[in-house]
Length: 388
Image 1 (spheres, rainbow, N blue to C red):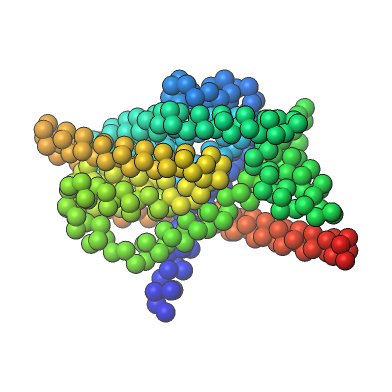
Image 2: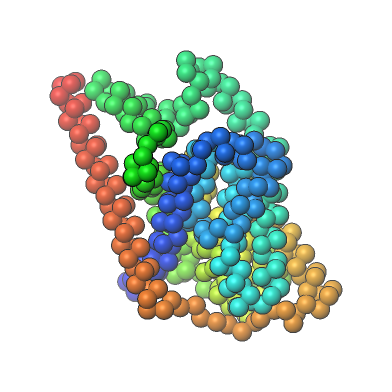
């Protein structure tokens, strides 16, 4: 019983910690979807070129978005015309580092990590984007060509709308569902500023949040379970070899933690005896991905892209981990590391902001749930009236 209570407390703490960043990510995604011209995104990130992939990595690196906030931002980017490879590059670089995480790294881990983390984030993002470019973009082009042949309009949105259309093929609801999906995904044109602001908020808190809310809750629940039942000793008993790095990568991948929040945990791991390289693996793999991100990638870009994404994150983090261990041992850089444990706590004013954001996010989720339930009942009533 006590474990269940602790699990609930950990879930609530994680939900509260991620709420402001998730809301920020939704807002950024809404702005990109509604206000940023498609031509701009297509020009800078629409292709699978090395330049587009690099731009996505560099643009994403300083943004203060964590592994939760980057999901809606990347989804909005993808649906606004960015290529698979550029989207993956953005997805890797953005949560791995940021202006806030670099400053926290300098304060808690020392100057070496403050230098290494952004370099590793941008480089690994470009590497992941290139992997997708070489091994997944061709699959995407073939799929799009099939959709173009089978659709009289050749719409790019057809693969995403097909499951929803098939699910609503009753004689009463199919037309409305199809129109609603197009209405919620197409950008409004020639709107006044108040209308655009309303469109941004409506898209961010409606369609976009609806697309990620299930994976978001699954990811938070899994992270709370890991925090509740996986002891720190389990993470620190592997030493500093390849096994330690693999364990840190596999533990970090499903965790729902941002780059800034992962830093105090890294300090504890470093103080407990993990090598600097193994700690770097956790700092890269932990923020870069989680269950929610993996679900979104599979849904929007396919299984092959998801596999390449995971392979790239794991291999890049382990590669940089070995490189950091080599640098520390060969050039005596241990003096640039801090190994004293710090406790990261929010002040009273900041805590109030986190609570308010959590309440707002929970309210938006509850509204979506009630709206979905009402829509389901309405469809059932229409189906019964129409089909007897």
